[in-house]
Structure formats: structure tokens, C-alpha cells
View 1 (tube, rainbow, N blue to C red):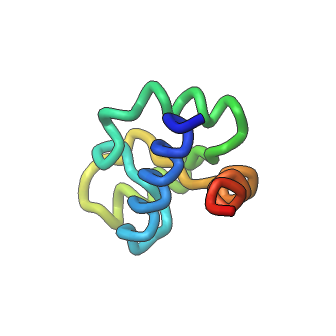
View 2: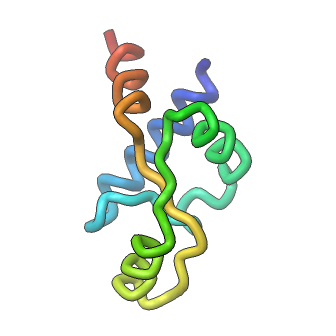
Length: 82
């Protein structure tokens, strides 16, 4: 569970740093495998093609994937704090 929380907190930090609210591929490259697992568990939401195109235009470079916390991911972080 601690590894899961670590990744969720990393995603949240990247979201907060981003003006668009998404954690981008290059900011989480070292966590790519864990991110994929958490997407499969419904804790993270993946940007669709249109959103990635918008993010790419905004960033001035290709965004291959982007994620953000799902409602469940937010709940897990909140529960862990209590």
C-alpha cells in the first residue's frame, strides 16, 4: 500500500505543478510501470488522444501519455491521511 500511496502522491504533486492538471509522461517516466498498474485499478485516469494533443500543443512537445488522480485515487489519499 505504501508504494501505491507514493505513486499517487507523486501524481498529485505533478498535477499541482502543471497548469493543466495532468501529470505528464516525462515527469513520471521512472514510475511508468506502477502508473499502469494504478490505471488498471481505477486509481488514475489516462488522458485520451484529444487531451494529449492539447497538452502537446500547450507544452510544445509531444505528450505520449498523461494521467491524473481519479475520484477513487483522491479518496485513497484522503483515507490514508486520516
